[in-house]
Length: 452
Image (tube, rainbow, N blue to C red; front, side, top):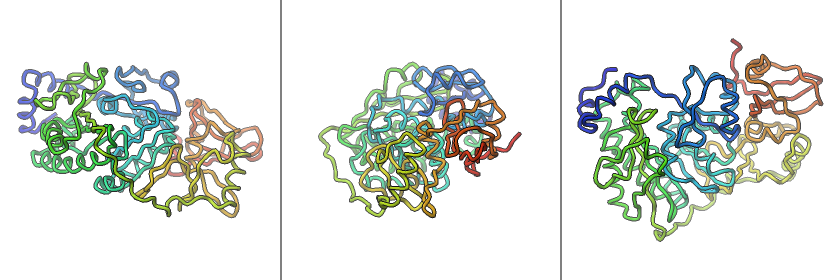
């Protein structure tokens, strides 16, 4: 790999005698990693995949693996796992995240860290997963849907709007800021080709604004977690030092001990509690992690007024049709789900929503829509609540039937007529409707995989 000469000089100055080991690591293949989802426990996932998994020591659901094209595996389509670099996993492992926390991931696409966060806070917790880029936020929403997460609101806003909408609201705010990407040079050669000193300066200006706005969203006593996938001091330690200087209500905190053997301390005197992840230090690419806590007596601001237009309840007739579908096809009791009506269907969120829902792209789980007096379930409903369906058809990942289902074909299936959830090795993948011994396929056309 050819590195920009000025980057080499910077890294030699930063790493000193360790630079040779770092340079050697860049000539080796990137390390691959994945995390299991709420749809399939980690131990169960390892038993079903056709390639070996090795535990990531600092992450309870993380694995190293070495296999080509994991995204083509049926369990990936079913949302049983998400491919994520081991160093990227490390950021969310910086602190013990509590069940039922309210969390904001303010630069979330494509969604790996959001998936980690949503899994750890559980169904009672709330995650607002935000992405400013309109194209990338669609990818984010699709990944959240595939993973069957029912406690996430996906938004499309800048961080300035978030700071006004959610002042002092979250127990944890993650700012995984856009950066110059120096930690990804081994994985993406175009990142090295696009690098420049000017890009570092431009990213630093943007990060300063993001960090300020992210801090405004942290509740008293809550945490602000800042991360990048770059090595430059300007985007990392200098950014943290400047933030702490201008925001005295925040204090830099040590990360969890599990990360210490795999990372190195920050390189400036006032930011030694921050951690750096290098490819020659541990399996993975590059990551910077800084954990800060807001003082408990810093005051809690009032939320923005509720957006009543976005919290429309179903009419009595609509609620009746939804309850009727649930009682006939699932074990979910009527009124067990808090349902709102949106332009694209009826949605449910497993946790208590915030007061304001401006900028929402996806709210919880889309359970379906009503047309001509009939309730039609949405694919996401099967993905998130498939195990509650009365009728379930479990397919083996390596079976011809699984390939046919993912390609959109009908399947022969004996049993009562009605809606059923199709599972792959026990993981809910999507829905279908059995009619006279044939399952009519309702796997979305945009997700279908051609038969090989």
